[in-house]
Length: 213
Image 1 (tube, helix red, strand yellow):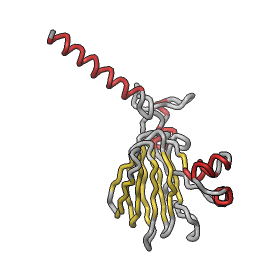
Image 2 (tube, rainbow, N blue to C red):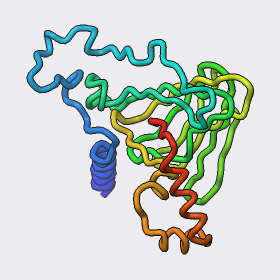
Image 3 (spheres, rainbow, N blue to C red):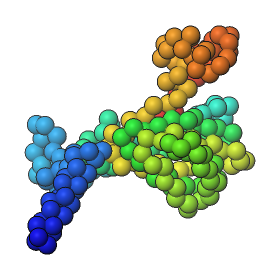
């Protein structure tokens, strides 16, 4: 009987591990890295594994309300394919915000390079968890939760957002709610406001600039 229980436990553990692999953000590779179609692995040198896009990256004009972002993910860095990781460089001048958004396929690890920035996320119990991050700090945002970053200070902040997927995806709430054509009646009833308020929010979103991540 004991042997049967041990075997059952091993089978259950194996199933759980396999489930984690199946439902993970990125598929598991069976090689060191994924070679693009039509390419020869031996011909791929260090340039294939290098992303130079963060060099000399600068922010939007000082009067822009949103942070400036440059992402390195599967859309522009083929070497990430299958490796389960990507990054975004964020430059946040004083007073700028990375609006509430979600990454449906990845957790996010924030590392502050310089300056100070406020960050927060809301979990599925509707609990808001915030922190003021300073240079050298790390902060984790669990996968799929609404979160934001805000520089409410006098100096520019720079930070790296790293993701547990090569293609984390992003859904920016202002755009999702007010820039995609959801019927006014739905928004009026959902938010408990009149149609004029919804119209103003839709107009503001239409004129806004969207950060990448």
